[in-house]
Length: 394
Ligand code: AMP
Image (cartoon, rainbow, N blue to C red; front, top):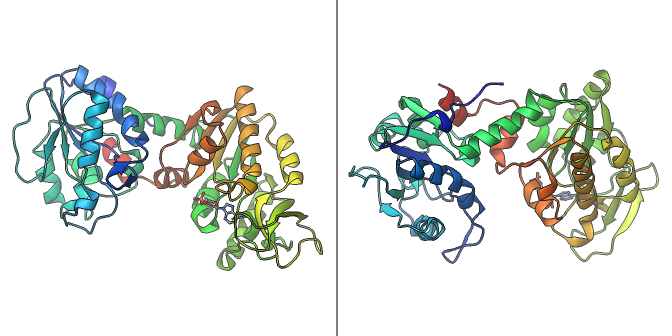
């Protein structure tokens, strides 16, 4: 396993650390509605402060128009909240162009880095300006490591001393358990809305896994590809060939695949639409119904399918879990994963909505690891080189 340069090995006393974090939190009327991303960076922040470093924190927030200051996306609410969490003042740096001495041992937060030209273009000159602020670079923005942006890629490449923060380190090491250091049998559970989002991951993981459970909206394209009826369930016509290829490859590689045998379905995409269960058998699934959750026969088949797994990766809900009537499939599969974890399997949950689904159905604390990365985790699982990781290794 390739190890990232660890902060634990760094001497940070008296050094200025440029700490790239992911403080891209949801805001409503200027208030933070979920501060998990800020709290997730606290161990690294505290570690650095306790060892006498001076911190400059840098993050993006939302998608402001490139290079334009837009108060809607200011990090000021984050600054206030961070100061409360740390119990100490957080200084404000309005822009990176006016270099100023940072008080030794202090914490400062730079305004939304996407307000400035050069960040999104991964501009070298902009990175050189950022580099003047610091002696060491610490990459702690796992949610952004798949972006080749200046504060994520060009800057750490310029810096002599660069380290992974604790969050990035943990994400990386846990990802290796489902990518390179795999214990078998290895079960991959994928779901969610779109085949196209998950295709790179499926192609990369297929040779590594032993069992593959496909559920959620994306499973209907696969069922359709096998010639089974799906009514008006989600179907990506342009992905049917790819779905067929995945299934053929799985057979050729002797992998076990479980597709939904039945679905909880409705005639309309509404939370209160009357639901009925139908099997995906010729003549049995009505044309005017759409599957919004896996049904009881699928859930029953999934239990022995997961049994004895040593490694489980779960990405994507089994149905429209946001609506209570279609949450059961996701809740049951999540429970099975938790039970296997209790028996000693390693389980990684994440990507897209999966972490929030696991929390909603109350199993998050029984999984081995819940990833905080959406797109970044998906790219890692697809075998892609992530710019922010490669830069730390350079
Ligand atoms: P993803 O971000 O790709 O993991 O997709 C998650 C989304 O897929 C959630 O918002 C679910 O509501 C949605 N989803 C899951 N199953 C279905 C389904 N059978 N039909 C429509 N949407 C679904």
